[in-house]
Length: 210
Ligand SMILES: [Zn+2]
Image 1 (tube, helix red, strand yellow):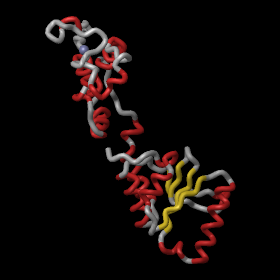
Image 2 (tube, protein in one colour; image 1 turned 135 degrees about the vertical axis):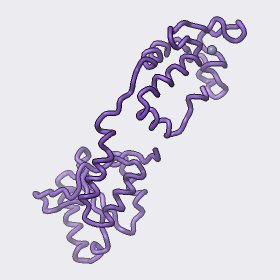
Image 3 (spheres, protein in one colour; image 1 turned 180 degrees about the horizontal axis):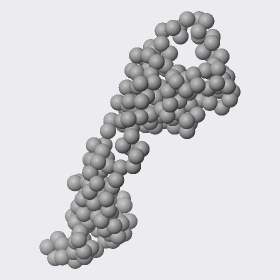
Image 4 (cartoon, protein in one colour; image 1 turned 90 degrees about the vertical axis):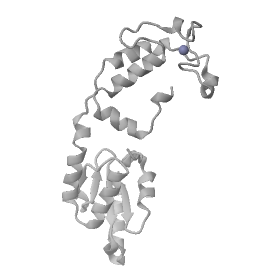
C-alpha cells in the first residue's frame, strides 16, 4: 500500500483539504480491487485472471506483513472505505482558532523569555496553554501559563529567579500549589526546555513537527 504511506505532512493535508480523506479512500478501494464508485468487486479479474480472494500481493500483502497474511481480508474494509469515500472533512473551531489563541497568549506574555517559551511550544506543535498570567488568588501566585485540563501551572523562570530570596519564595509557591493538587512545571532560563516539555506528555502532548 505504498501510495498511502506518508509523514506527518499528510495529516495536515487531510485536515485542510475537505476531500483528502475521500481521495485516500478511493485510492484504497482501487488498491483493494473495488470500483471506487460502485463498490463492485473487481477481485476475480485481477492478476491476469488469477484473481484475488481475501488478499494478494497486488493489494494488502507484502513481505513486511507476512505474519499477518492469514488475517488480511480486503472485504472487511470495503464498507468503511466506501463511506469514507463519500465523506468530507471540516476543521472544527478548535483547529482554526489555534492561531488566534496563540496571538492572544503572546499579547499576555510578561517577558521576552515567556514569548520564547511560547514560541517553542508552538514550533514543536505541543498543546497550547489555556491561559497566561492566570491569577490563582487562593494561592497568592500568578503562573506565567496555565493548563486547565491537567491543572498545570507553568513558570518560566528568568535570571531574577536565581536570587536566593526569590528562590525560596518560588519553592514555597511550588509546595503550596502541589499540596493543593496542581502540577507545577518550572522552566529555568538555562534548562533544557525541549526535554522538560517531553517529560510531561499528559500536559503538553507529544511534540510533532507538522
Ligand atoms: Zn488482491
